[in-house]
Length: 173
Image (cartoon, rainbow, N blue to C red; front, top):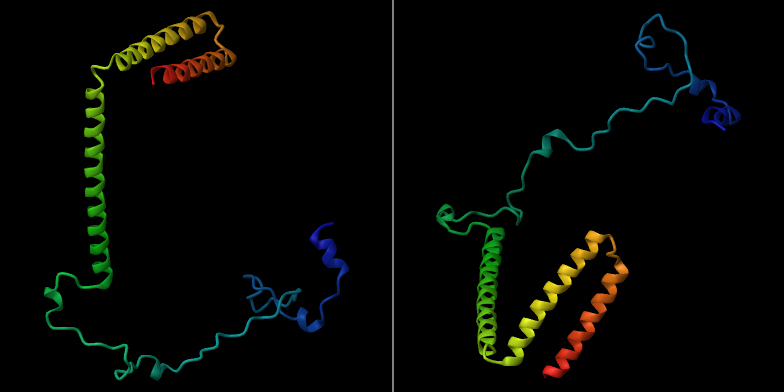
């Protein structure tokens, strides 16, 4: 059902409602006398405040304050600016602390690698991991070229590598 059909079934407009002309260029013509159904006209704008008192400022109220004469020479002029400077100082402090901890962790990591350079288990694990990675990569490439590489094969090999890594971890401890 269309809107026009639904509106046609509803109550009809009264003659007073119907007496408002449409606001079209033809309706604005003095010769135009055809009145159609329309909503009533909107009234004018209601103005509440007086023109004479709207611009007055109460100088005795507490919101009016005097500015210090050296205001323009101050380094920080607003509370927002002071808060921003405090925030920037805190961020710089955090950044310096983070860089310091990163340097320490890098140094500790480098010392850990150098400390284990004479350990045969550590060297053996590094060589074994390199060889296994190269072998698996080459094998995966060959399977891909043959068109036999599948997600099932990748999952099985990944599980085997994980099991080997777990056994190696507990054996080399």
